[in-house]
Length: 151
Image 1 (tube, rainbow, N blue to C red):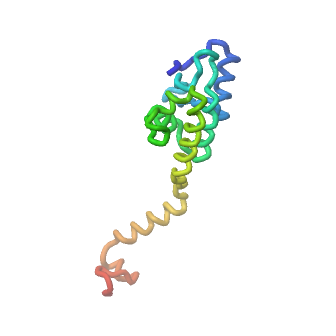
Image 2: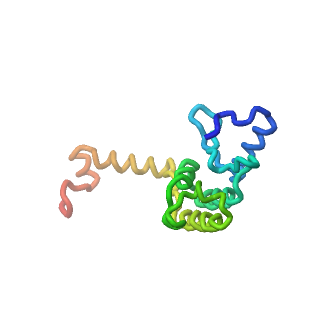
């Protein structure tokens, strides 16, 4: 991985963060702030991301996959591409299309994220739990029973 500050020049640093925000470069948020950029996505010869990286990142971004899961997928051997790791196969133009297709298939299988419950639904659930924990006389007054089917 590249360090927290991979580019000493401010304009270059901004360009790297811009690439990450547009899903053209994988950026991993760090706990203390800033981002880390895995080196396996960059062509060392020209210092730019491999051509297949934006397509892979875009497929996972549409599915809502977090960056750390994408990094793990890229670094893990995939049966869909003959047991090779996408991070290793990305440079070969012949396998780049296989990597892209595997990313799209994996992202399509991912289940959509369910939104967190609203505050109103949480309040209703808490109220229902409070009713079920009330004392026996109060439960009887509201027509609630101690056993199923009896009053």
